[in-house]
Image (cartoon, rainbow, N blue to C red; front, top):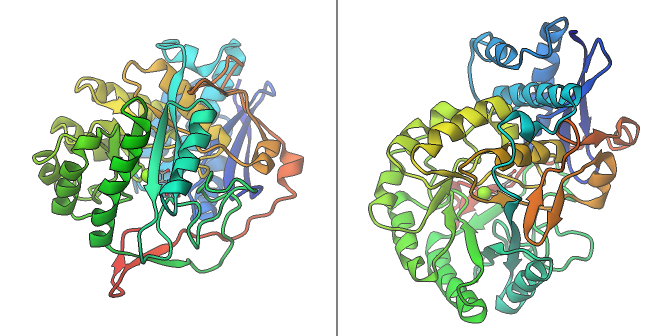
Length: 415
Ligand code: CS2
Ligand code: MG
């Protein structure tokens, strides 16, 4: 009973993914996700570096292996390290579930709810196309949608499927904004952005959406790290009448968490933050000072199930809930891990769901389901995902860096 083999795969069906497969001496296999959008090869190389250290270890000792990889690295934390540790951790939980014949959520205390409230990404280059996009999600049963809008005079902006640079799904007009099919370039595309245009536009968009759809559906919005603290404070106040479920990444408080104090003291619009935070310790100030309402990290980027469970347990003492990151650059393996953890924790909030492309789902066979606005991880032993290595090999890695953003005067800005 030991880890016998560790395989690292980089495959690119709809976009690049990093997959870890651990095999035990009993032939039980587990999968992990270390996909780090735009830096996949760094994460894959880190996994290859630590792979020999895993051989011979007892696969049941998940916490010990976590501590070994975390403290043993000496150079702790950071997105590459924590994505690699996450992949090992999730693969070991997958193995443990398979060996015991139970879904991973059962190992985390069992189900705390029947399903996971889910939101999709609606967007539009104008109100008619935005309404079409929202309608398409409501028609699919979503009870919550994220609303992103184009900005007048700005050629393309984050989250808008119809904008000049965005990649959209096959024929799904205005339906998708994500990186499938990925924008394959060696060098990042550059986009521009302007805070005044944004703040003059978005409140009116939310007003129009509320006027059309009423207060029944949960509306979310992603500021994508782009406002200064005082701008975020003002924006949060401006959109209070539209009762958003959350405003996400309103200011780049991942490094300087005190920035959110300015926002918090001015607005009651709920705050979600953390999709680029990769360690529980980087949330300590945010949680202790109640500067956020939803934890945005994904299991994939934040040390795996073991680490995220600890983070969410601490957050639960402040009634701070989960809003795990679920874009297409979290692989179906990482998505499944999000869902197992989300089903078990008492302080689940909402789950992001950007459905992967059919090409990706041909490579990753998932057992999670989406029904009537709710996701469920399924009850297969482990995390319930199978990986078609043979088919994956047909999709070699291709560079696909994220865009770089600049203000109208050319200053580099948060993307
Ligand atoms: C976004 C992400 O889903 C979100 O909330 O912030 O799509 C983000 O842009 C990508 O994950 C970056 O790789
Ligand atoms: Mg986001």
